[in-house]
Image (cartoon, rainbow, N blue to C red; front, side, top):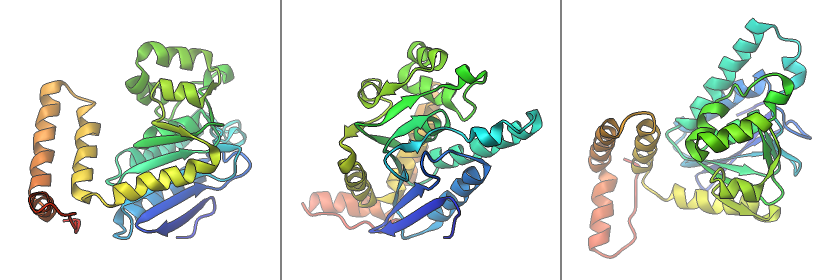
Length: 259
């Protein structure tokens, strides 16, 4: 996999994808396209069971969209860029494998939207967050107004979106925007520890959990329960279900084969 703005390393069934546009790793159309492509490739790879997404350097995870590209676009051009970003973020959100955001520094605007599209988020204690778009005369266009409110509720979402003020990793943890905060030097080890645990889980069951949660969040309770039942049935039909239950009865560690 050769990319201009992404670095990727695969080890022990874990892919670590790094956005590589230092010093602050801004997102442009090319990065969005590369993110869509690499996630498709990793989804198809039998060597990958979990993915970590991070930014290059200590300064930024992603400090927003590339203003230098945006300032020269007309309405048609910016809508094309927006659709490209939406495709990338939706690809990550709906990937059949778990994605962990390791937030090493600034996660602003599109960078925070990218993190919100991931399944789990671990932040460095030095990380800072904001949706500054309103101060630029625009609004978040990569899902920020929608994904944020599902996590923090409408009132807090409007506060963060209206004022656009920077907030710390600790507040992000309090608001459940991130799952965990660690020292910078512990960030990737912590993300890899989680990824290693996920890589040992039965892949189909993980996929069905993700599908049930993601799809169920957009419908009423009864519809969500119907989705869950379908996902439950799909997981129960696997060889890994037989192995998991038998291992439990025999009091041994299961050996999952991914089908």
